[in-house]
Image (tube, rainbow, N blue to C red; front, side, top):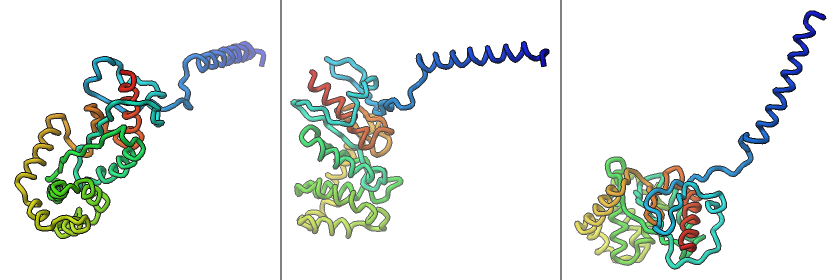
Length: 239
C-alpha cells in the first residue's frame, strides 16, 4: 500500500487542480445554455444610407418579438412571392394575416405571383382567378379564398368550377370573370411578376422581402417576420 501512496497523492492533487480549472473556465467563458437564442432573421440587401448597421448583428432586444413603440412615416413593405398551390405558402398565409392584424398601418402586405407550374398544375389558373377578381376590385378576397381552401381545388383535374363558385360567392360578374380566366393581359401580368422575382433571385415559394431585404427561408415564419419588421421599424424611427 505504501508503494502506491505517492501515486494516490499525485492523483488527488491533479483532480483538485482540474476541478479548480474547470470552475474558472465556467465562470469566464462557458456558453450559457439559458441565454436567449441567436437572432434568426437574415436580412440581406442594401441598408439605408444613414444606418450602416448590419441587422444580422442586432441585439436580442431590437430583434425581439414585441412590436417597438415607435412612430414611422412609412410602413414596412412585406412582399411575398407566392404560389397558391404551394403547401408552405398555404401555411404562411395565416401568419401573414396575423402580422397584418398585429401591425396595422405599420406594414403593407404585397403579393407577387410566382406559380411553379411545372410541379403545381393548378397554380397558374389560380393566379388568373386572383387577377380576374382584382379586375373587379376583389383581389384580396379571392386571394384569401384560394389559400383557405387550398386543399379543395389543388389536386382537381379542372379547378375552374370551384374558382367560379368563389367568384359567385364574392358577387363578381361571372361573364367577365370567366373571360379574364383566359386573358392574355392577365397572363402577361403574371409573367412580369415571375420575371421580376427571378431577377431578384427568387427560385421557390414562399419568398419574402421586407423593405427589399430578402428574408432567410429559415426565418420565413411568424416570429422571423416579426423580428425583421421590428428591426426595420426601429431603423425608420431613428432615421
